[in-house]
Amino acid sequence: MEKEREKRPNRWSKRVAITGASGALGSALREGLQRRGATVIGISRRPAPHHLDQPHWLVWNGQVDGALEALLLEVDILVINHGMNLLGRRDGAAIEEVLQANLMSAQALIALFLRQSRQLSEERRIGRELWVNTSEAEVGPAFSPIYEVSKRSLGTLLTLQSLDAPCTIRRLILGPFRSSLNPYGPMSAGFVAEQILNLVGWDLRLIIVSFNPLTYLLAPMANLMNGLYGRLCTRPKDGH
Ligand SMILES: NC(=O)c1ccc[n+]([C@@H]2O[C@H](COP(=O)([O-])OP(=O)(O)OC[C@H]3O[C@@H](n4cnc5c(N)ncnc54)[C@H](OP(=O)(O)O)[C@@H]3O)[C@@H](O)[C@H]2O)c1
Image 1 (tube, rainbow, N blue to C red):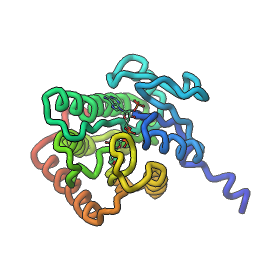
Image 2: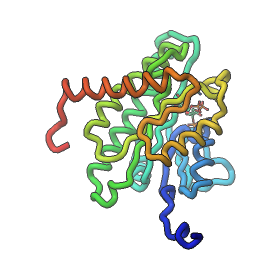
Image 3: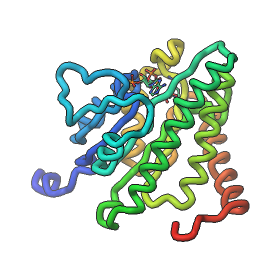
């Protein structure tokens, strides 16, 4: 029995890069992934924690650059997790900042990861995964209109991109949890991270962690309808 278990490959023996790595969920996911045997590389605007060295941490400014491109070429899984929420604001600077962080920079990473995956050999491409943390705000109120627009747009575009994706895409739809982005969230980031990793273990593509039962109904419906709409009204570019 023990020998059988030893022979089975560990599904988590992968190189995983995660953005927003020093945030609440980013840190919890890093710990959970490491505990399961993954090699985790944090992508963050902050310097590496003192116990981590350069191969396990990349400092970025929210924009794609050469170092990030080189790193993403080498990883099996990219988790796009960074995000911001300027609660209570509606000025132009807030709109620009939130759309840039939650939508534009996430989109640049998605486009890069998909482009790289298409260019890799089939052997390397199999096993590549993109996880995108959109939020329950895709299908419900987050009491923050600009944040909702940014996350809904990210989700809508992700549905279109999933139609011709060369690798596995998983969407994280999370209910409120405590962090600097949401100090009032009732769940803990550690609990949410464990649920995410358990659901990924079951190979689910739509990962929902929420205490709101409506989310379990609305998110799959929205995903299905947006996918159908995308298939009807758009077509893949030649060669994709
Ligand atoms: N908390 C909730 O209730 C909730 C619910 C659903 C979904 N989410 C989503 O979960 C993700 C993680 O959020 P969290 O709750 O863990 O919040 P958090 O602790 O504030 O972590 C978010 C991290 O994103 C990075 N970040 C912030 N602004 C950025 C910018 N302008 N450019 C690039 N990176 C930036 C920062 O990480 P670095 O300093 O390491 O760069 C920050 O620590 C976000 O995408 C959020 O939208 C949160």
